[in-house]
Length: 158
Length: 62
Image (spheres, helix red, strand yellow):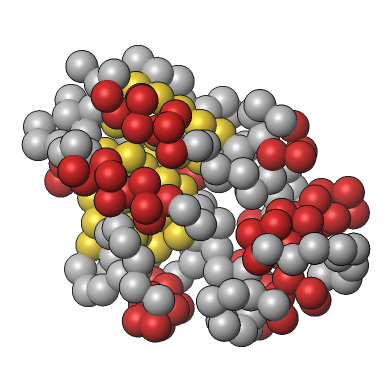
């Protein structure tokens, strides 16, 4: 996740960053106690915010999507070679966090929830949007917009 | 669409579900959520009139 680095550059431009993570506040606070986020974060286990901003949810993951998620996790971890088995990414998480039953329940309940980023101006109007998979289809899972793109959008704010 | 109000650890988030992502030019829906990085809450309205905000919506910890 490189968004923390982008957040620091946005801060220098007077643009704040706010995150929302889809898990309950108690679990998130425990996680972030050991891995401090570079931005304020809200907890929304029910995905109400994701729905309000219109982020797509495709229901239960397909096998194809599962493989792509595995490859995205491997890419993030810098792993090379064949990646098989859902356990790989979970055991190899670079943050050392162990998936719990609560997380598994979140995953099952949330299904294929896509994520996104929205740049909102001082008046509360959306000025730039990036929705996961909107450009690359299913291969876009786990891909973030480039730093250049986000900073350019911030510079173009009215 | 009808609004929904989701009780959450004593705080509330009021939102309207929609079937397509918000597009540039549309108003961002306000929300207030329990803070995930510490005590208290976070709210999009806290930034209104003060700073632009990059809002990043993530999945869970799975």
